Length: 132
Image 1 (cartoon, rainbow, N blue to C red):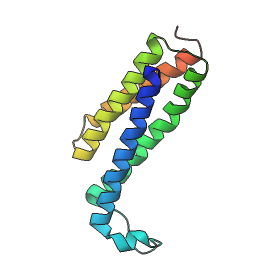
Image 2: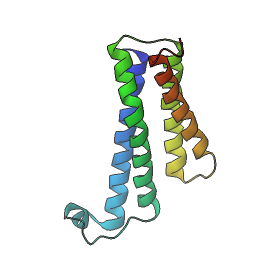
Image 3: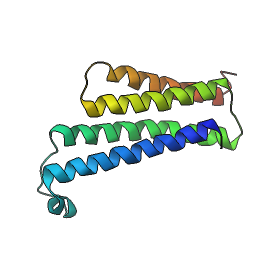
């Protein structure tokens, strides 16, 4: 398995961990029975639960852009210094972003987000043949 595909798998594993933390936070804040029902009357998430919903959504949005590019690169057997750099930038910055987000630390988190987007763009530019 290529490094790009391995880091994509790790990115999905990170999403699974975040979803499990978010689900646990939801049960702790709203209760298991209300969450097991139709959720019509449970009200909006607050505090840590709301933060976890946001970090899961944010990571999922990043994966929606990143994953297809890595799968296309794997399909056409493209792996070069740009795809490797972009993939590493995406994964490590997303992991740092998640830690900062979960911990509720301000200001630095957006920098990690930008690095992740930049990594995705590097992979895209390599796929388009702009970066070789």
